[in-house]
Length: 117
Image 1 (cartoon, one colour):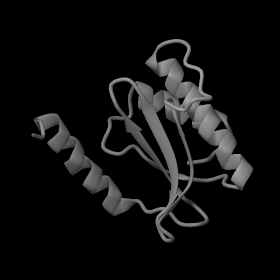
Image 2: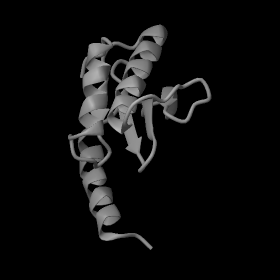
Image 3: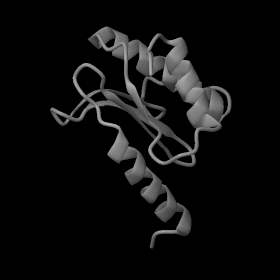
């Protein structure tokens, strides 16, 4: 059963997705967060493929600090991987979450890593 919070986020997500779309030149950086983990993907919506992804549940990922610190680490990791495949500009899809806390920290880390929104 969906809660009011989930319904609200889904509606916000649909409003955001109407406005933004990822292309080959400017793919979409999509964020999903759960209570414990954070997941990030860079997606080309025209070809319908995920170009690169990073998350806090990867076996090689070392968690240290609180959840905001983990989000910063994941942001740096996704920026590094995006640079490896030649992506330097993205469209940020916050996926219905407020631009606050972990989402803001992740976005700032991606910017510090060299990607442009």
